[in-house]
Length: 609
Ligand code: M6R
Image (cartoon, rainbow, N blue to C red):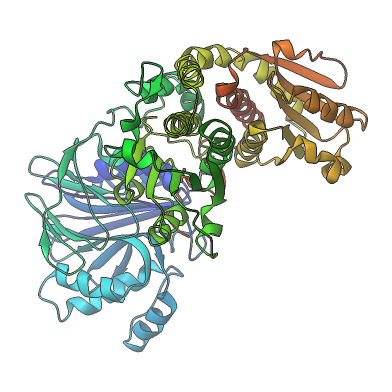
């Protein structure tokens, strides 16, 4: 939520900052702004309502010069999207950008008003600017003023502060929102995500909770939450330079859908051997920790939660352990019971989702055997704070609608079922079958993507629809939920999902010719049950779209359009059947003319509660 970029350089940084914002636009896109100071302390601030392109045009026109600057792309929390609420915010010589939420901003606002400060915006961020300005009156350095301010702020934030009178440095504080520092030659940078800076450096340092850092052209000094000077490791990134580009594709989402065979190949590489899952895929001490597991508690949000729902079927059926799956925002606020020998698993593409992270922190005090995260972003908070990590290696996912992250998470979770099952009496042949099914995935997904053209044609039928219903049984009921989330998220068509057996308990009342019903129907032991549910819909005049195994013997007719999905092993069917639903939501959104990669009201990385 919100993207931040900063730079201290000798050259003009306007272009670097704006390009950084473009690459962070997935984090928020309702307004954007930049403030740049030149060596003579002249400051230019430009803010625009709308996407980064609006800002880019304004910055271009103004021909802004200066080597020290901060920039921001916003996802509104306090105060509507508007130019006045856009960052950077100012107080005297102090300029601030901020990501996150200051929970005690009302109280601080009153205090600052009593000190004579006037507020121009409705944001919580403006209190930071005034607080730093106030503290700097008595502090000897900007770092000290920021440290004193940080002590008074409650909530989760990453914030960057610049003093017009001293353009040689910027100061950044991290508490709950990610901040990465990028090292150049004679110039240094910072951002909410390394993606923003891949044009200018490949060397990064991740700040830890409570850190405050001072960045100059030649030096970066870091202080921990106690104000002690500390060293943080600098690492060369493995993220590819073009990770943030759309390439030949019209949208990131389409690119990411088509990247799935390669992403799956990458996630499997080196992790399957001799008919077994290599347990070190989950961390160095995973073999020993996983051998103790008798119960798994999964916590996640959104699409990642749906991956957890699928995994529950796998873990209970094949790994022989019980499993609970819960939405992080619920888990963190209720009293739950920890089963004996229970493993805590968090699932997250970003590794920074506020609710998931808070749930992990809470759970660590509760007596789980260990915590494991299935995560795509190296160095993210979830990875750093978990005992074990399965690094997804899906590559950067920019589209707000999660696609390749989901299928890669599923592959990681299927491996987890194999790795736990290995210690828990899973038959050798069964494990070998699971492994070979996983190995067949990249080719199978490639085959499935060939359905794109027929799905694009089918999408026309949804152009005038306002509601839809997704159905599946078993683990496919979670795939139906994921399909519904994708459709509603990017096409704004209301979509519900049900386990098909539940239809007769209420949702059947919704069925009429205006409500398309999407069914996922692999050839498994629940097929006949599913067919009965399909008949229930047909009998009520429903119009169905069935994604079915070619041996499932569904026939297209006036009430039902059948699209054949390549036959696959039951182990990987949830992964394979996800792709047609992703493609359907993409093509429906295209017809609807919505903003596919940046749907209204949303942001990619939800770092606020
Ligand atoms: O980064 P995470 O996987 O923790 O994100 C969780 C959800 O915010 C995310 O999956 C969201 O539901 C997606 N936009 C769905 O496409």
